[in-house]
Image (cartoon, rainbow, N blue to C red):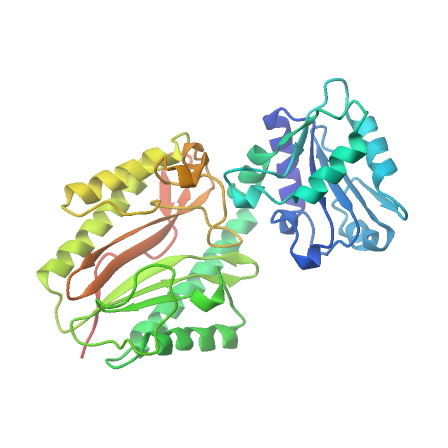
Length: 391
């Protein structure tokens, strides 16, 4: 927690803002997505968590919420209040800000993980500063939020690697357990039973995690596992799985072919998907924009004779599977400005795509990579050949 707060102060300075203000309340009902990076407890009354460019970290909270923040030792000062946050907030802003103040708030039109400030809380802030010199000081803190979530600390990377180890073990269990006649739902239930026994969570809505596809009649995408579709000889078994451990996530896709050998058309599809992932990895390095990485993967799959995939090549992974920030995707309107984000060292991305093989099913792969100073490193145990499930 402290290393993330120290990282936040550096990002405030880099952004050119004077301070970053997270303003929230009743966090048990679903608070700002950035809160787990700032403290471990909950907040009830109106609360202001401030990180200033000068390194000060000030928490203005209701008097009953102050103790956990004080005990953490991560905040320069704790300012408890009883009746209203207005006066302590304005006094703190007056103390910390000089002329022409710039205050970053948690809102974004493109990135849901940067859009934690509710409209009601924004209106409340505007009312508090009405008639003061802070009235026109608000702007988006998107730069800070994206990079605080995205650029991983050493301890965060260790936790992500731990989640990946659990995910590899789960795929091994699937490979050892899946048999002809098993339904998608049975494979899904196997994963959930094992995750529960090991105290693991899921990287997205557990109702659709994992995604399980058995053969050509299974709907590809974020659907629910079928209780009627069964694995059969000649099918591709495709599983998209994300697990969480100690608050950090994985997101991996793997494939098996049911048979004693893989048909040439299935092998060709698998090789094309792998080649596109390699092309994306070769393009991924600090300083490039997300859309440039996607373009490399997109060009590769088309040159292999397959249609373009209808999604981004990759996304960031952290506390959840889709963790916001720069998207390795095309400049489509639905992605807003996220494909124009600049890749940074120590960000963790997926590289993922797939193609459909008539009569067999979906060949989809997803790997996780860590951006290094000069390129990227595969941190998932990369699947380089299609695994067999013998009838």
